[in-house]
Amino acid sequence: MDFSLSRNLAHDLEGFEAFLNNHLVPNVSSWNREREVPRGFFEELGRSAWLQYCFPAERDGQGALKQGLLFERLARTSPGVAVAVLVHVSLGLNALVLFGSEAQKERFLPQGLAGKTLMCTASTEHTGGSDVAGIAARAEKVAEGWVLNGTKAYVTNGALSDLAVVSAVTDPDASRTKRLSLFLVDLNSPGVSRTKLGKQVWIPSDLTRLQFTNVHIPEANLLGARGRGLQQILEIFTHSRISIAALTLGTATGAFSLALEHARRRTLFGTKVVDFQAKSFEIADLHAKIEAAALVVWKACWLKDQGREFRRVASTAKYVTVTIAREVGTWAADIFGASSVMLEHPVHKFPMDAWAASLGEGTQDVQKLVIFREIMKDGKALPTGWELD
Image: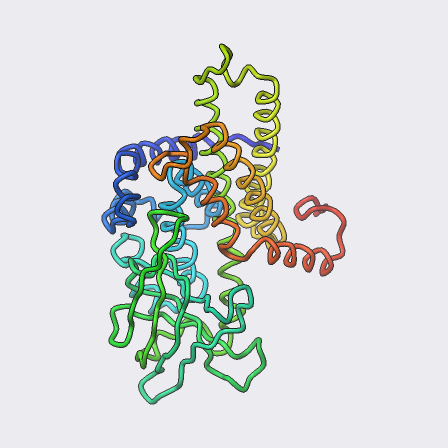
């Protein structure tokens, strides 16, 4: 097994880190105060081809790995900015890539990859969180297309986006697995209202409630097949779990690096914090856990890029990274002591953002349910990817 990055990938990462040093690092504090990721940042990502980088024009066997590396690096500096980009890429653009017609791709993808048309996914409702099928929003068929009514409760990028992937009931009398369809909804349409919600996680990304009142959707904006919305949204989430696992790994890595540097400098009772045995053991323990989490994340990327089944490992990666990021984030805040409670302090965001990561693309219990079902489905004792071909 070769765990090293290719020369090309290493070169790409150097370029991306230079991009972040120019466009993110100097600005993230002001964005946090303003509670907004500027649209210009997405346009810079598009102009520098980093959004296109997530979707190789030709299958190169590294698409998932490339996305994972970018989100991990982004989250080391700002998990909040990283999740805004992730929603646009992994939930929005990827929905188009997976299920969009050629006409829809031609219409929306170029502007999306340029960072000029921003996307989000609106699925969660007050009545249907982890129960993706248990939603109430309804799209009724009319002669010219569809009319959408309902509310989506917690939409990341909802205030920022131009286009949303929206799930709605189209066949209320059908079974749970055939009731839903997905639509591409122009958020500037008449009848769409947005309400930004107050939150203390994943700052500066927005969290927004979307209200749809008699919103007309053209027939051409039905995404995929009618009645297949549940299967489609679950597949979108399965793919995105790899990305959010990489983001959460970056959350853990960013918190650990920040606290370790502080522990090297800070002196207590005449001794550097890193020289206390208790702290040195904690550092070694957390480093080992981060290393183990990274291996699961990159394995999930590898399985996807090889065209192999990755559902179980994607959920495992998310479950493991969230568990470890929570532990690392709290530890890092403790290392900084009282200063960590200040909103402006760089470490303050990490415990909160590790907590937020447990909610995206399914809670920890949802991940355990997926893992268990996949184990029982294939009946194999060995972890996915170790089978003999």
